Length: 59
Image (cartoon, rainbow, N blue to C red):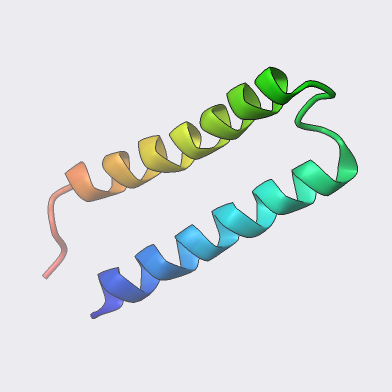
């Protein structure tokens, strides 16, 4: 249950941060630049999740 809640929170945070980056223009000016920056943003979140999930479970 705790892992599910953490995953949902992380997804919401990633989406909110991406939206903020879009509204402030920090993703770029062209559509390809925005898409590339968006993919990079989510790849960082996925990499963070994989590292956390690869650690041995604490009991």
